[in-house]
Amino acid sequence: MAAARTGFRRLFSISAFSPPAPSAAAVQQAAEPSTNLFVSGLNKRTTSEGLRDAFSKFGQVIQARVVTDRMSGYSKGFGFVRYASLEDAEAGIKGMDGKFLDGWVIFAEYARPRQTQAQTTSPPASDGYH
Image (cartoon, rainbow, N blue to C red; front, top):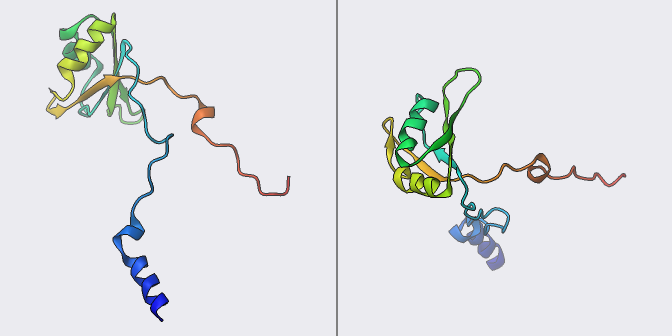
């Protein structure tokens, strides 16, 4: 009977429901410095031109693009800014990270390289018959 109570207490204790420790794959490292910046937290009405204007104060912007929804045409809330040099990109991060753009606080960081399909999906599970 005492063992049943201990198991019951363990079932409803907070430690029984603690999340597992993050795996090495789940912990993302900071991206390497590059001229391409990832900008998140954008207002739904922010345009690529508005993004370019905001970031051009800190250096020569080669390209600014807000990623939009195909159906509505509104921003998905993030975009990319490409600078001519690493120094300009660093100045853009320092100047715009945590600042307001179109009434919303935005975040700027170095963009990570796009992962290929093979890196993002796992192989099909074997059912034991093959």
